[in-house]
Length: 504
Image (tube, rainbow, N blue to C red; front, side):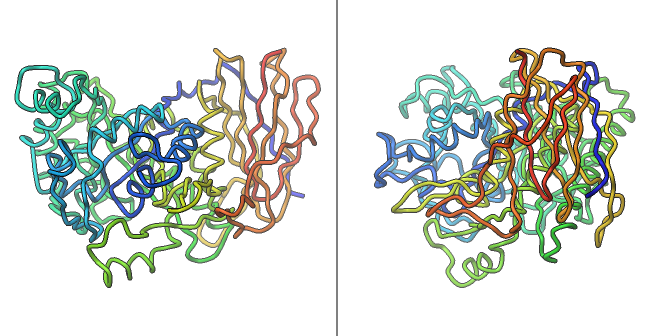
């Protein structure tokens, strides 16, 4: 058995109040995310607007407070005007990003209506690839203003009397990527993002703007891109975006778990760049982070490439439909812990994506909606991870993997919800073949009792779920002691653990 992990939890060791938008997600017009995902009017579960009620219930179960829309790569050639007004008058468009045909049956009005049905809000992206400032202003006016001006009146003419009130806006997407329609240099993009954000805030001063960071930490542009873009746009934006996807292409579970330390290094690096530009500009404003794309993504890549190359311009083909494994769920759990550990800077995070496309929720076109393995860590974090993230005083063993040194055996974070009188400890044992004795000193939480201990446990790292049933789902644990304010238990190898205490 591995060495013991010890944790001391105190209310005063506060990292930050957690922004609930850290449990956001993402829906792009890609594959079956929209069509046969959230919208399928011919399905048995469809409501009066054509939205699948089984999907609505699962999204509500996840408790997603914000959904990024409509992209993604899709947004860089997005003509929002084609998505509004009578459906029979909307133009069909070729989507260059994913080489599919976009029918525009779902647009801004319909998506805003769907977001309300799932108790969420919209994080809207503007096209700064093939379009620019005037189009961004027209879209903002259509969405948010209640004036006698043209686009606001047009929204009312289309049947939506009240504005949608979208408060969070992405200034394009991955603009340094050579795959992006309208790719730009850092200075080119920084200037157009600055002018778009500046003009949009002149029109609606209540909005917040997210500027594009580099597409990935491995990009040759990373670092200098963030510095140059922020040098141009710092005064008019509120967040910088980060994107990162995880994969186990080497079939090395231990190193897969360890690779989430790279995510933490990414967060620290971008935070440092933001603070460098802040100091350079003698600014009092702090730019925070929007990690608006993250997930495991690698299972379906070869099939996707073949589909886009050999069968282009189809209607909602099966794309990016990764079938997630048990180990993917553990990796996502570690990612969520990393976000919470840095919730003083990471204010928004969007699991990419939400339905069918690299998603926790899958649908059968003529059958049910169902939960993938990655559904559960996100569900637990969203349900129990509201309040304040606390900095644990923790000692744990370390190990090394093929590509990483000094990997902590246990990754953990406590979250204190004072309003609910609830303390939750999220913990992952990253060792793949050893249990870890775990001890938490909770004497600062006198009068608290263990309410539940939920865990994901498996010896089979490749176990997955399907429409036929869930092989990976939480179990309730009872093998622990809680004496004199100390919680003691043993964490199974490669396990996700959610220990909830409530004030008696």
